[in-house]
Length: 114
Image: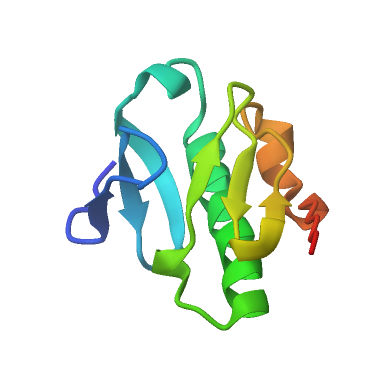
């Protein structure tokens, strides 16, 4: 496979993986180093988990009018992404440990409590 010059190494902020990102395809194409959470996961799982976390954070940031970088977030033991806002707001995603969940990003569940 000769695609030199098109790939960028990327380390998601939600885990310790090192993945290869194809900017032209706007997609993760391989995992170069796996974290303990993604020992058996596909590169689509890692990318999907990152997108889910970012969607949760963005939902809270937009609701509060703050920068996404200021929104605290975490993953639970089942790899659900959670983002938290002041006043008890909470956004969460379905678990993305399996490829079918990564494919179902449209099914992001957001719960806002005030």
